[in-house]
Image (cartoon, rainbow, N blue to C red; front, side, top):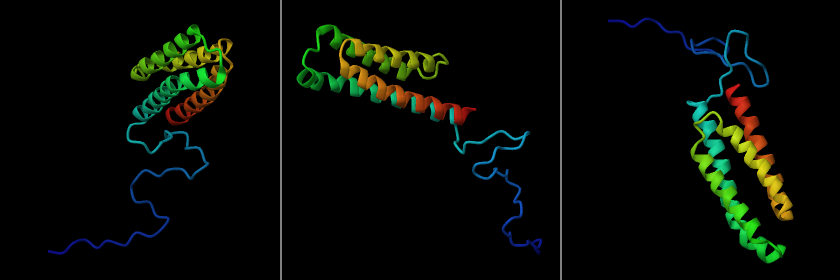
Length: 144
């Protein structure tokens, strides 16, 4: 029994697999843009959850250094930091909900408003607002 003759694959010839547009070019009108991820929605949810979890951790770990270096960090400011950290953890667990991304954006705004209680909270708010803006950008690029 003989097998059919197969010609070796040469560069530039289609192999039957979907062809991705070159880097920097947009896909043609009929083809969706592929991210290369198995489950892009899950990857983006993980990015959001990871960002919020990291924010919660940093907020909780920042309480003592702010008290020592910053001076007058009162009970209201500590309570606000703990409340924001708890909200960030809760939102990280709820990233499957469509409104969680908007709530995360509101959380960044609240942290910026925390700058009224202590200047260092404004600094953390600016840093995490930039990180959150980048996460939103990545989400938009991957999911379209």
